[in-house]
Image (cartoon, rainbow, N blue to C red; front, side, top):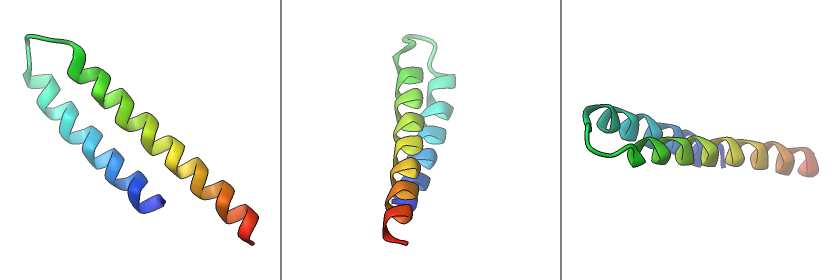
Length: 54
């Protein structure tokens, strides 16, 4: 799950780059927030799963 969390952060950075170039709509920045939230959730889930399995 940490691997997917890293991918979510990478996706957020990609979206942030393109969103900063977009002058028309603010919704791409919401995508950045969504990807970062997904990354945080995945890392927390991985930590919880690791604590249960150890």
